[in-house]
Image (cartoon, rainbow, N blue to C red; front, side, top):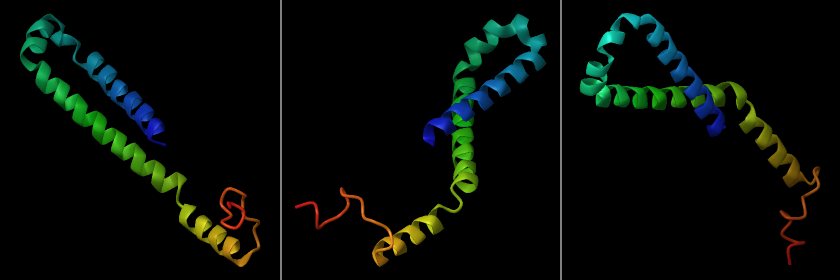
Length: 97
């Protein structure tokens, strides 16, 4: 899930970069000056943007793709404790000895 969030965040940040690259075409003659003076600020901004985009995609993924997980696990736990579901061999404490 984290890898998917990182991948989607990277795509979002690249889309923002491509959008700004096409919108700010008039600054091309000054690119050396901008990079020389503002490279650290631009890098920090992109790092914060990437971190926030990753957190947003991760939170949305948990919200929409894992919304019933707790209820499903509680149901499985009740069925397992009632003996309705066979215990896997690696989890059965009686068979582990």
